[in-house]
Image 1 (cartoon, helix red, strand yellow):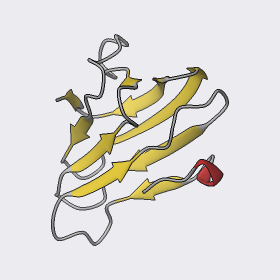
Image 2 (cartoon, helix red, strand yellow; image 1 turned 90 degrees about the vertical axis):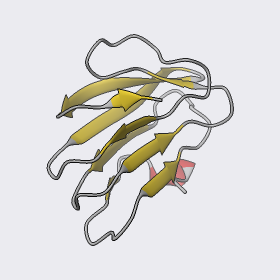
Image 3 (cartoon, rainbow, N blue to C red; image 1 turned 30 degrees about the vertical axis):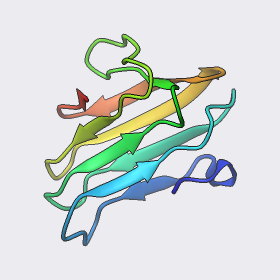
Image 4 (cartoon, rainbow, N blue to C red; image 1 turned 180 degrees about the vertical axis):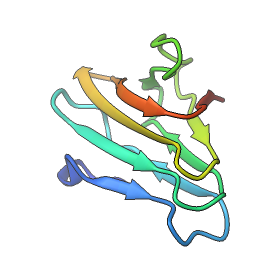
Length: 99
């Protein structure tokens, strides 16, 4: 679980032997986090409730409550909340999919 007090931290799947789900806190303006796939396992960013995360490749907001995922070593994403309830992507590497 990612806490609101973790603002600015980087999270990784380094050493993971299975899928890792990062449950995001409620999207509050000013929060931002980085996520890095450090093991060839799924890294999933799960928004709070019906909040949305922008799909990195298009910038379009995902469906309410949909998560984004990647699984290749070296993929990464930095997200930030600029509008309450929505996560936007500042930068990314690799292929991220909305599910």
